[in-house]
Image 1 (cartoon, rainbow, N blue to C red):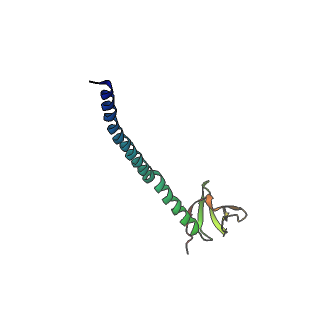
Image 2: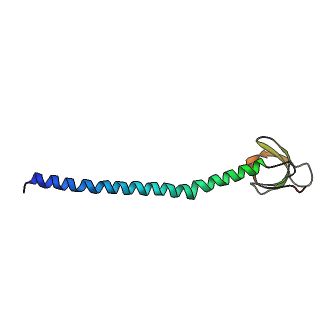
Image 3: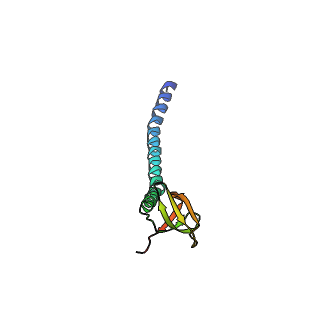
Length: 109
């Protein structure tokens, strides 16, 4: 047997195996990205959409809970901000961003 013949047979045999290994890695990476999307990104988008809808449905007189845990009543609503009255003394009115509101309880009519 010639040494050149052995080298060409050996080189030809390894090329076929590398193609299937690369395909396996590619499929596993795609599968991991799909799992990551369904476990992380999709639930976060649902939560953001739910929060956005809640903030859009706020009305004057609704009881809100801020991200700090304070309860108050909405006095005024603008595009980006709200004015919240805390306590019963009517002098504690604080303007804040809508994003600082964690929960809204509709006013009873």
